[in-house]
Amino acid sequence: MTATVVPPRLPPRGISDRSGARPPKLPFWLRTPPKKVRTLAPAPGPRQIRWWVGVVWFLVAGLLLGFVGHVTGVGVLQHLRSQHLLYEQLRTDLAKAVTPLGQLDFNEKLVPLGTPIGVITIPRIGLSEVIVQGTRPVDLTSGPGHRRDTVYPGQSGTSVIMGRQTTYGGPFGALKDLVPGDTIAVTTGQGLQKFTVFGIRRDGDLMPAPIGLGEGRLELVTADGLPLMPSGTLHIDAALNSKVRETPSAVFTKEVLDPAELELASDASSWFSTFFWLQWLVVAAIALRWARGRWGASQTWIVGIPLMLALGAATSDSAISTLSNLL
Image (tube, rainbow, N blue to C red; front, side, top):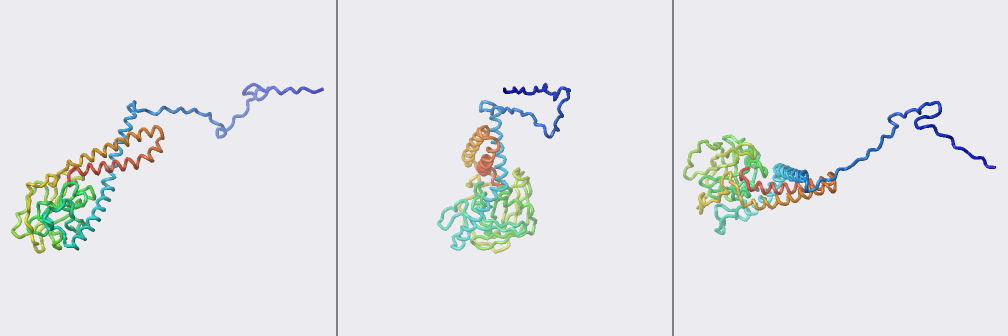
């Protein structure tokens, strides 16, 4: 005969035995916290305002970061690369004796804008830059530019060289540190020309005395005031110490000069390329806002930061070339 086993009767919940004693509580570090069910809010869509706020945030961040990156890094690298290429071209032209010496080249044609014509050196501020022909905003992205309606440095008359204060390396940003007596050297196809600074003036100051017949003078021009917020122009006047070189006859004067080559002038021809890059920046901002709702924040930032920086820098590069040529 098989005995029937009756399972023991469990005490009521929370009571260990019939005596009514409760089981001891576990220490807090051994207790298992209750699981919380996390509910994710649905990602916003294009029909919601906050979705477009995110697009605008991406766009503004790309423009600001791209502009700062261009002024502090990209523009400087572009300037250094341009100077290296210009120096190699100038050295070749000097060796072949085909460096331009006036408004016309050896083929009796106008010297193309952007052509290297010499090297300017200012020991006091550690400057050594290749000078290009022309002073349009796009010309001055490569280095200091020679105003085409003036003579070349070392020739009879006043030669005007303009350069940027801040952007694209800001080659003339330290001109304000010059004092009378400082020396300036310019090497052209006619040899080495030496100048001595005798005046520093700003807008509203008295002009220097007219230059005498058969004398040479150099005038350096850049923006005055805070970086990217010019209050006028700064002029450095220097007298020629070396022998006056042969001066070719001029074929045009200031009256027929392109207005974009004058002081603090801008060039509206670059607005088309600026609008082109801005369109791509807007498209990228919309695409990244859409991707953030699908991929998540981390993955979007990994892809988005380099893309927005590149497009922001390209847009800034095009926009800066439309602004004042002395910034």
